[in-house]
Length: 203
Image (cartoon, rainbow, N blue to C red; front, side):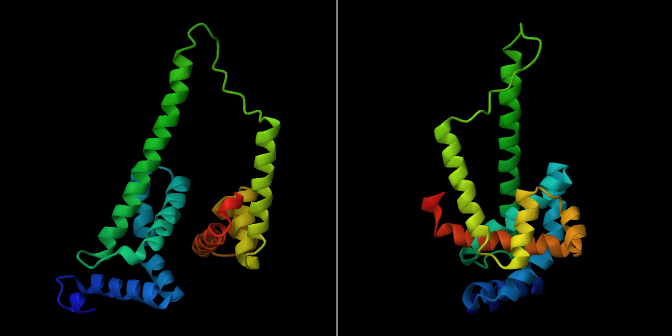
């Protein structure tokens, strides 16, 4: 902490750094939760300005914190933690936008190439028997992994990704505040990732 005391960081940035150290050194979940609480809305609104979609901004916010928490031990207090976090969120959003544009361009290019066709026919999604078997195996493993989560996290994952509920629908279904749903779903995805790391050879 010596470099922190001698740094030119603001009081806010210094406090952020104490949270980072608690999270990394002590595995303090309350520190992770406080970081999420302090920056979730600012990150969300920043991304919303970039992406112009509430749903995408919500998902990208969760992804940004997921990536930041995985790299938390790499943060050095040479500059404010918020700067580091915003950079991760911004880069992740730019990647998302680039991929989305590439998909749109791919579809449009195929469409323009079919000048004599009355409408664009998408590539068939029919799977070969081998591909279907692999997909079924992946789904089976995913369900097995989700079953290992605590009941509240299990319900969140099932509703969001298996039944494709919106955040608001999950909030209504489980009678939880919308903010709680988002925070717990983030934690559920983190736990899911940790479990899948040990079983990635099966997926």
